[in-house]
Structures are given as structure tokens and as C-alpha cells.
Length: 261
Length: 250
Image (cartoon, rainbow over all chains, first blue to last red):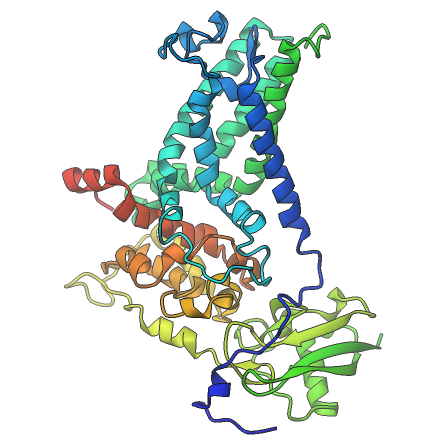
């Protein structure tokens, strides 16, 4: 074997291993399942926005709440309001889709999941990505991920509205399964929203002196505990909002019609 | 109970080399580094491997075992089946000196680029007064043993050698976060984190956290908080305006 000096070109090379990875476990399984689950969510979301059966008194499907147009059924309107008026003829869910959608799209956890499963950057740890160049979130469009906090503010409002919808449903139909489906969904949505990394930063993460802000520090401690569960809450709330939405639509269509539905 | 295990070990100098097959004895309770040492003692006396404490605290024996960055001294042989072939290669992101030993000087160059702890003018060592809650966040990052497995696995430089000049890697972005969160550090870390040390390259896929042998939550507790601080500084007009008007105390 030839000897090399620190300046020799060969000394500056990595090990020339030709395969993309030497991992022997099923590293492809997690990105594949993530790809399938997120794709299912997207397909369902498109269908739900187009579908007109979003209200069955007192239930309103989460994908269509708040309903802000005059085309919304009287009971489906938020506080009886229809601020958009009758000129708007597209599905009402389209108006608000961008807010929770943007919150999830720019979420630090979802970014990890779709960068891995859709963009393969990287598909898994220690598995070579297929792209020739990489600039990450340094330039447009991905630099826009930095506006996540604004979607967080909007998500707080959406979470409050979904909670209001669920509480109204329980008040009007306490024995209805749908009321409790909406309550479970609202709890998971609010927990996911509060566990957000931007929320953690806003409560006190931006401070360097926790001791000068004891209340904010307590809030940060609480949010930090939730934040540790951000990934499972992201999945749980995604499935719950899909499940609750589908449930209400099936009730509205008469497909689910048992006495306490 | 002993058995004979099949190993493939990277042998070569610089980038040139190949995987060589070995069959070697394994005894109960042993770790991969023990087997590498047995190979040196019995079959390959010139096999190069960097090691020191054998207790997972010095960060010397970083290597890739079955494709995953691991500490050789902390990877138990009992985690593999007896009929499994175990592949051991050097860290893929850094140049190879010989066999399993890599040249990690990239990391020391990046460390030197970060200005050291900068206390306020007029405050001398011995005069710092801090409450525990103010420093415990950054104390987590002090657990780092500098095994550089996080920098090794980060795809930003692992898969893109050309990004090395612009990207400090998770280990040193964590160091910047540690200093930025320090109640007595007054240097401007946020602007330099983004512009000079490449924080924007991180797409938070969390591989650094997955491989950290000290279980430091690098992504959640250092990189994302640092990204949020940079967003405060560069991308959030409301925070910028608030800071101008109210001169918020940190």
C-alpha cells in the first residue's frame, strides 16, 4: 500500500463507496408510508372542498368551517355571519383552506416529512439523495418557510372556531356521536397548534433571561412539553380532522343514519 | 457464548480502497470496536482505527456500521444476528486518512470561524451572575462529545461537497445557538448564523438528532429555535417594528 502525505490529492478524498447507502434495514418504509398518508390527505382535502354536504344541524365539517358566504346554510355560518356575500359562488371551504393548509405546509415537522418522502432530500438518514445541487431554505421559494409564525396565528383562530363548533354541537346534541367526534378533533387540533415550534418561540423561546419573565417561562415549559409530542400530534390531528370531516359529510349525506349519529 | 461473525471492513488510503471480508470471533458482551481490535490483533495488524475511551465519551471511534454512523465502542454485537454480515466503513463526509480513520479537520476549521463567548464590556470573569433557568437550555448542548456524527450524516454536506464552505453543520450551528441563548453573550449571532454559517441550508430532516450518541435534541432545541430567532431578525416585519418601537428587553 502506498504511503500518502497530508497534501496528496488522494488524502483529500472521501471513501469512494459507489452505492447510495450501506444501510441494511428497511429505511424506505417510513418515507413510503409518509408519502401514502400525506397523498391520501391531499386527495381527501380536494374532494372535501368540492363536496357540498358539509353541514347537518348541529354539525359542520371541519374542512368547511368557518363558513363565510351567503351560500352557507343558516346554521353553518359563524355567529350567523356571511361577510363574503352572495357574489362568491365557489365552494366556501376554498376561502379558508389556505390558512390551516399553510400552517401544515410550513410546519417544522411536516417539512421534515415531505422533504424526505416527496423530495427525497434525503429519503432517509445516510441514504444519498438523488439531486445534483442543494440550496435548502436559503432562497425562493423555500425561504418563504420563515413565515410559519403567521400561519400559526391564523391556526390559533381556526382552532378556536373548530372548538366553538364542537362545543355548540355538544350543547345542541349532547348524545350525538358526531358532537364528541368534533370535540376529540378540536382537542387534537388545538394541541397540535400549541405544540408548534413557533408557539414555543413566541411564548419565551426568544428570551435569554427566563428568570425575568416567570409567567412566560412557565408557558414555555408547558409548550415545550407539548412540542416534544409535535410529530405524533401532527399525525393524530391530521387523521382526526379527516375522520371528523368525513363523519359529518356521511351523516349529511344520510349514509350514517343511526339514532345517535 | 462465542461465534464467528462475518465482517466487511473498508481498507485503503485516501479515497482509494475496498471492502475486505473477515471472519472473526465474537464473545458475549462485546462491542464492534472490540471486534475491530481483535481483527488488528489476529488478522490485520495494519488496520487503522481511531479510538480512545471505549466508554462513549471521547467521540473518537465514530464510524459507519451497516451504513449508519455509530460509535464503535457503543454498538453492541448483540444487536446483530449471528448470521448477519456487518459492514464497517469510515465516516463518509470526511476525507479518509487510512482505513477507518478520517480527517475531521473540516470541523476544527468551522469551530475557529465562530467568535468565542463575548461578555458585555466591563463585566469581568467572576462577575457573571446567572440563574439556573437562564443557562440550563444551553447546558444541554455542552453534552456534545464532538464525535462529528451529526455533521457526517447531514445531507447538506454529505451529499454535496460543494456546500462545505458555506455550511458549518449541525454541531457548530448548535454552538452558535448555545452562545446566542447565553444571557451574558452580546455578540451578534443571528445574522452570522444565516449569512456566514449557512443555517438556511438546514431543512430540518433531523438526522443529526437521530445519530447523536448524547441524545441532544439538536434540531428541536438548537436549530429550530435559531431559525426562529433569525426569522425574528430578518423575516418578520412585525417583530422588527416592535423591537424598534418598544426596544424589547431580552
